[in-house]
Length: 506
Image (cartoon, rainbow, N blue to C red):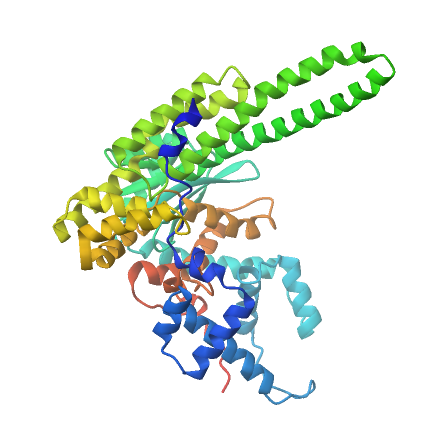
């Protein structure tokens, strides 16, 4: 039975990022106190960070927020009618405003016309004029897109986004988020994908491997264009399918149990009237369904948790143990296919057919662990143990007991080796989440238009790649654009790249 080996599997993976550890546990009051201490200068920032279990960057961020709030609170009040500055509105400024409203503000063409009319009393603009402004911008953006050197991309994500039934082929760099492909096509077959990937080679695109879902055209196109180039499986889609299956069975089990309990209450009332036999068959059938579905839902949930937290997690066992557990889970799913086969079999077949693709990231991670072991002259199994350590709950004794055993073997080198292991795991992508993020950002533009054009996608790609991040879960991205993250070099503002001179207050 599945339950028989549950104790041998580590509990749910614990994220090793600071945002899910110390920072996430700090409430508003604790953050307020932390910012006050940081502003007072009574203690070093590093000591405050250590006391609260957060990074120094997090402490600096809270201090900046508090400082900004103080500045706003004590700034002199300004009359609502006082002129703050004069704005010279020229035709060039109008064109910049139109581009800013459409790209920054996600506005429609008619929305731009209304804003100019209502706020600037400017009515000399039409839908055709806005179309021409965008067309001129596309002519300047396209050569910039095509001139970008893509040789710095080491891991890329590929996917297909659909708009009005047509596929938009998308590709992005996992590390910098630079979008190197955004193409509207009539088909997503092998030839279409292969042609685009071959064209991108002319810009230097030669990643170590790619990450994608299990689309046959995408994978066939990459195999034809880049023979021998690995295409790892996107663990997000596999986990999502298994999670949907577990959630469906849990809802089904809850519904069956509720129906059975309702029939039981009816039976009690019927017995008092001497009519208990009228519901006996229904009650027996409902009891049988509950006894069938409840254990099935419980077992599938356990299997789903193992896949997510042990088999496909970064902080998990070595490749051999993962493969063994993977095969065991497939056997358990197959043994339960007779119940709800239309739900279980497709998920099981997907996981079974994509086993090597889904576990491909483990091989990459293992190579990094071997390099760490060689660098510190220690056995590789100790590196694996440090990785598995971060699959345990720090609030449980099991974590600290295992940590102490590893510490005794590594002594003073423990923290340095642990940092190297965490960095290796953080730099080993398993999913094409960058594409999913890109998809969500593009939806804000797509919903305004039933029909897309390649010119419009070309302009969107330019803007997304040269627009700086205002916020990000990764602090090193804030204030930089994907193009700057890819090349390591700053570039002009995206409006200046299109040939405009931006307004600046004196």
